[in-house]
Amino acid sequence: MPQLPFHQVDVFSAVPYKGNPLAVVADADGLSDAQMQAIANWTNLSETTFLSRPADPAADYRVRIFTPESELPFAGHPTLGSCHVWLALGHRPKGAEVIQECGVGLVRVRRDGTRLAFAAPPLRRSGEVAPDLVAQIARSIGLGADAVKAAQWTDNGPGWVAAMLGSRTELLAVRFDPSLLPDTKLGLVAPWDKARDGDEAQFEVRAFVGRRGIEDPVTGSLNAGLAQWLIGAGLAPPSYVAAQGAALGRAGRVHVAKAGDDIWVGGDVVVGIAGTITV
Image (tube, rainbow, N blue to C red; front, side, top):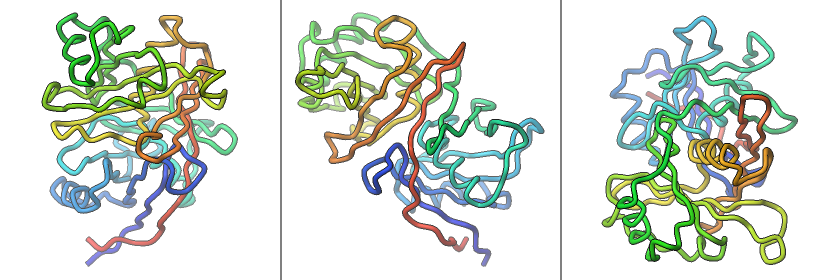
């Protein structure tokens, strides 16, 4: 049975075990969809990725992203983790940036010192959230509708809708009831208060996914959509740090920066496991 390179990395943290884990299988050209889905189901991580040769000549590699149940067209921490592994295996990009091919098309990744950052892909859905859905979001997090200061669709593939609360303290106290919002991927964001929360980050983020209401530790795709909304609406400066994962005992840090027309979403990646997988 063939053995393929296998890594498990921690994304959006320079400290091991404090970010969001990702499994990466390289040289996956010969794997079938069923094999990839089975492996993703077995790792039981939020995402497992599979690296192969690109179909688009402009790309450096192709990545397919699987949850334990299905394939995603794009996700942020799998983008950075996959790129880190691709580079660690000795590959080099054709140009100054790494070009990743995935379900949403080509995604640019750049090296920013010790970090990697991806250019936020275009939103598939944006704009205001209907008042009845805002009220439903508020009920799902156990708050009154007036607690939601703003809401916006921020969908760049996974289907995110986002809501802003008034404070980090309020956000960290949220208890999400997925039965009240069963078919929506919900992102929550709130500003840090410098006097109370410090200045290590400017926003706190939480993400809830699926009918079981699973909380994602650190979420690149959500943070990309949030950045496009918050910076575009003047609710955030052109450069900021978002913290995510505190409610789960993690310490994720997402570094956001607007440069020209691009918004770059970056973070650190550390390797936890390196070896092979038998398929």
